[in-house]
Length: 152
Image (cartoon, rainbow, N blue to C red; front, side):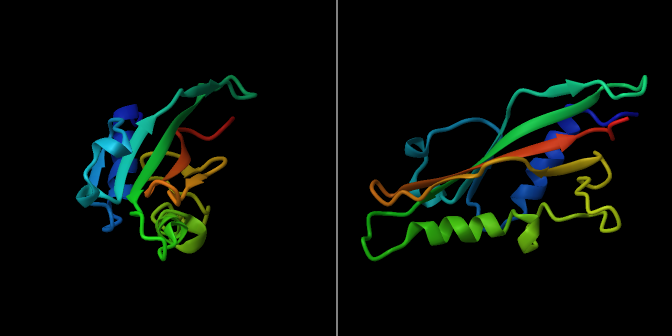
């Protein structure tokens, strides 16, 4: 049986949720202002448009499920604090290059398969950091791609 979109989504959410710093986690959009400071850092995982790509062979289309992981922090307005430090430390807990939760679970192929559910899962693109220096509300926006099958 092929892994469903929902199975892959839950597996990714669960993997990111193992980061114990997060006090609030959900798969539904919410603004930083709507979350109490006591609920931050928070993890919000949102699905983005998915992509289908036909392989060179007459194989099934390769499916790419795309996500944004939002990490919301309350840096406060303490002028002696450096909010980017909090964001960098949280990013390191996700980044496979720093041993984060998206590290390869298939070391021989260097792929994160979400427990053998998908072909690969990785950070894909530009990570946006908003430290919150001015208003105390910081955020990371991390693009993540899940690949269901290998390209043929």
